[in-house]
Amino acid sequence: MDTFNLKKYLIENRRTENSRKVVELLSTGLEHDNKEKEIHLKRVAAMQKKIAKGHVQGDLILGINRGEYNIGDEITSLPDNLTVGGDLTVDHNRMTSLPDNLTVEGSVYLNYSTIPSLPGSLTVGDTLHLSYSKITAIPSDLIVQSIMMYNSEVTTLPDNFTVPYTLNAKNSKITSLPNNLTVEKDLNLENTSITSLPRDLKVGGSLNLIGTPIAKNYSKEEIRKMVPVVRGEIWVEKVYKN
Image 1: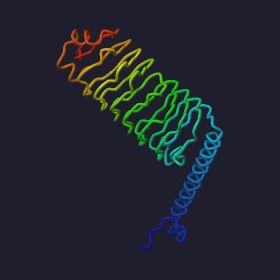
Image 2 (image 1 turned 90 degrees about the vertical axis):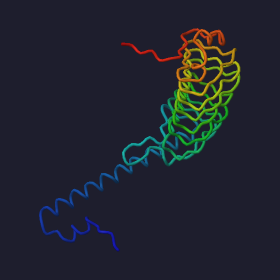
Image 3 (image 1 turned 120 degrees about the vertical axis):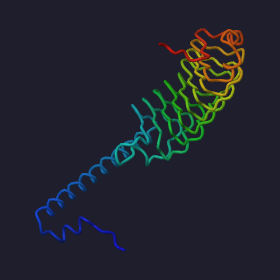
């Protein structure tokens, strides 16, 4: 059965003033959609040229919903040795991997991304966001300031790893901490399956263990003896203020 075409029907039956007005409105809407699509394609083409040069000044946004069209959804791969001068956002995108030796001077947002792993020699000038992503492990050569991996699939961190600022692993799949882990600000392990802490763990700020098995089995004082190099507060239970 043929699909009913309202515009065609109205054009063929211009018998009333209302019909003519509806046709005019439909035509205007189609022209607007075509202009929007043309603008979108120009943006994608300009973005592809910047990426091909190996250096993108400012932010690179791939896959954020902008109305009907996804900015950068047509871009499914990036070249090795790419430098992004601002933030890199990859979510709701068909990209399956990030390039090796990628440098992002701002933050990297992989929230809700389906990329399964991080590339080698990844440098992030600010924060790596992995919430609700498919990433399961952090590579040992990652250079980053902070990691926000709450509600993520991350299960392991590398030995001898340093996070210069904050590591938030709340509600993540992590089950144990590596040897010689240093977090220079706050470490949040709330609602994870952590059962023990390595003695050489170093935390410059607070350590949040609320909702973990270790918090249920040991007191705050006992945990501090286990990991003497925790400079800030150790949280084992929620504090409710009246």
